[in-house]
Image (cartoon, rainbow, N blue to C red; front, side, top):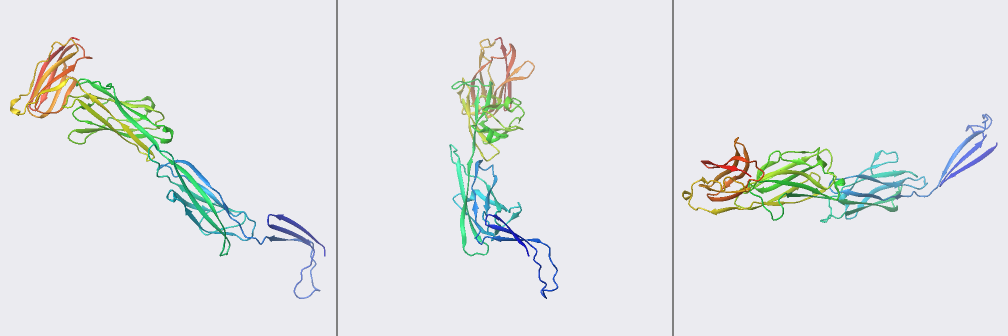
Length: 420
């Protein structure tokens, strides 16, 4: 018999290839045997050592709180050469931020979903998928909020009661938000005034240090104002070039209470807001009311919960409009409209006295010769009494106009000749 042996070593596993021409017995006798040609037999010899276990860490980086919920992975490996498989019977979660992390599933070395307990052969790696859901950013000024969790994984030799060792996968991430501020301003300078009937242009602008992260493609901007002091000009919205493809329609106007109303502007667009600056403008007419100064508050609502909205408002003021005499007895005052003074008007300014006999909705309009209203000075509910109003004729073409009052059952006009 001739024999040769080849030995191949790899890690803790050896492979023996034996070439021989030994004739195998038949279990009966040694006479009737069939000779055998030389052939190979392979024998694998393994280590008697235990398996091993290792893992790795994972950092999710910065994610938007309440908007992002990414999934990432960490490994569970058996780096040994042992013939005995590695068993993982449980994965224990620890740390203060466990609510922000969740194991989604476990994949074997072929990428097939599996479940605990795990049996991992030598040299194989299983993958654990973890989802990160940050929900609690730090308070203003909205600093980043770090999160972390630890997954403790204990390995066993298959069938062993005593563990081999415990390894820890450290998982971390950061939650952050995007502050967005809208500002409402108008074209009345600080401390300045405009006459009743004047048109005021309001400007809505936006500011954020992280427009790219915020992905703002819609907003709701509510302007809360004194009902008696302002009247929105339909069709007056002008969008900035930066959001030219957005849709912003005339506001929905809602009465909030006996003194306040709300204009709700809703904007949506195919592309996100990308830079600071004006978003849109709109116009309103100043009305004569019992308050000379009137605030306008802006309330901002954004669709994405990772956006932190804030807003600032503005105010308007009318000038030289005074309640000169309030009559306690309704019967003591008759509704009236006095002649305009001076008339003709050549200085750009005019004055008129009028009376309201009973508390009621009152309008005071300047009408041209064709019967079209060119300015509205009053459009609100006025208390009974007598009023004196100064108004501007600047910007109006020379010609004949009529000042018209309507209150309760009373209606009257006074001719005004403008020669500015």
